[in-house]
Length: 205
Image (cartoon, rainbow, N blue to C red; front, top):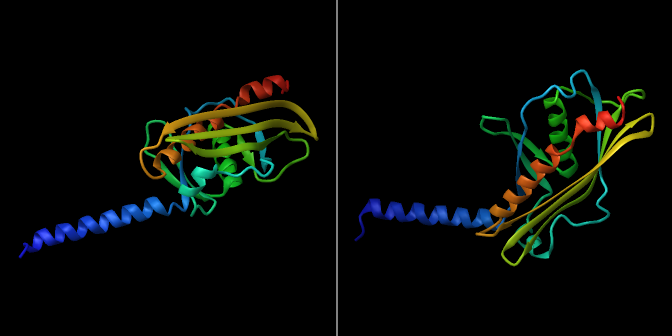
């Protein structure tokens, strides 16, 4: 007869293994860890309204192989915010538009701007059109592509425009972990590459 402590160990081992396998097989959300850059005063004194649109023209979030891994995905992203030299903290769960709205808003605030909740006619506003947000699994590689167009607008006139694209890949080891990592890394990169200083210089504001 096996000792009680040995049986207990075995029970915990199989319970943990079962939970781990279940978690890997039923990913219902994607973890996004957004890293804010160092604080700045680039936009100090600026009031900006932010508008985010989904312009992907029917593009699926996942390629066929990635879709199989994320077949239980609910459309929600669990957003964690990480500041310089600090541990990340969970902000909440968002759909794709909410994910961009929240992170770009925090990026603007990090540069000193006040993000307005209502659009005012004479103020500039920033419009983000998401044109690609895609994750695929090709062989043993996760490949992610995120693209958006950004416009600085006042009184329905485009004052400046930028297009930002990021691509990255990471080898698959097991489950969906590396897929979530690669899309999180490229998401931080494309959000932080939005050059607001150049925007206002080009717009002569």
